[in-house]
Amino acid sequence: MGAEGLVEVVLPGKVEPEGLRIRHGAVPVAGPGQVVIRMEATGVSFAEQQMRRGRYYDQPPFPFVPGYDLVGTVETVGEDVEPGLAGTRVAALVKVGGWASHLVVDAADAVPVPDGIGAAEAETLVVNGITAWQMLHRTARVRAGQTIVVLGANGGVGSVLVQLARAAGVKVIGTASARHHDVLREQGVLPVDYRTGDVAARIRELAPDGVDTVFDHVGGRGIVDSWRLLAPGGTLVSYGSASTRDDEGSKQWPVLKLLGRVWLWNSLPNGRRAYFFNLWAGRSLARNRFRARLNADLTQVFAAFQRGDVTARIAAQLPLSRVADAVRLAESGTVAGKVVLKP
Ligand SMILES: NC(=O)c1ccc[n+]([C@@H]2O[C@H](COP(=O)([O-])OP(=O)(O)OC[C@H]3O[C@@H](n4cnc5c(N)ncnc54)[C@H](OP(=O)(O)O)[C@@H]3O)[C@@H](O)[C@H]2O)c1
Image (tube, rainbow, N blue to C red):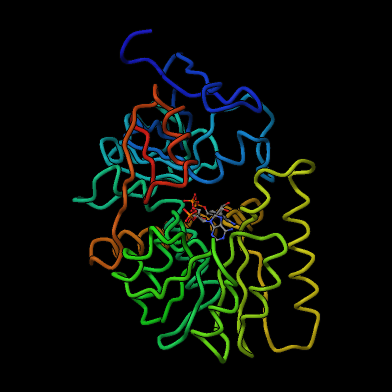
């Protein structure tokens, strides 16, 4: 294939990172209402770590092209699409398919990236930013003066979440490995090492009356500790099951268990609320509302970046041809920020 052809990364089954395959083909064509995006930056999220183990709760059957989100330039537009969209930089949340040089998406799913934001910078803010913004402002509805706990405060979602929370005047206690504590302190976060000691006891020392919200992507049995950290009237936002990434068995079961607990806790007359946040909730039932929210929320995150409320942390930038190195790096637990893939 020539330089203008399609290049994409295929996940053929449960494989080590070196088992990812590069496939060449023809650049796709935009149908009515669609655009072709020429990818400038995509990235490695936690979801792909789970998908390559067959552990993401609603991944498609193998083989497929992974890649949760991307930023790129609209190359061509299909029928019924505003022709002026061609040549503009956009971001898209796709769940799978992003690890490709060219991608077809519905024009309504392409969110404009403001001038002055680089592709790799914007990429760090797409799935991470939308998730963080929606959990903070739509689910938990935090207010200035409140205290929250963010597990994994240095991770992709966690790092955006803590910065948005600080900008909203919220006190943040964040768990992370010790090597990330200096950065967290600079952001005004009270860091707690989740790898040593009694984490819940340490958080209680910092917030003896309990906290207003806990954001928990770890799941497993630790979710009970998160629930117990809440002050009366507090909110638990569970949004992942990172602790079960390497387990065997059903990929849905860890999430179903979390949903069961959430349901049970909400049935008890205890004055606290629990949610399981899912970015895709409501998408199939109310597509236009889902898109409008996503567009509005990502626009807010980009504005927060432009104000300096949120920084874009890029751990490394590697070409698609080095996807195995990119995945290994992202999974190494040694990097701060997003591992970005370029065409
Ligand atoms: N529900 C949704 O709609 C939705 C949407 C997006 C993401 N997510 C979920 O969000 C989570 C984070 O995704 P990401 O892409 O931001 O991942 P990431 O960048 O890989 O970050 C993961 C973070 O988790 C920390 N961590 C790992 N094990 C931990 C533990 N036992 N206790 C506390 N922290 C722990 C890591 O800290 P160290 O580096 O210090 O080890 C790292 O900060 C994933 O579980 C993902 O599935 C959910």
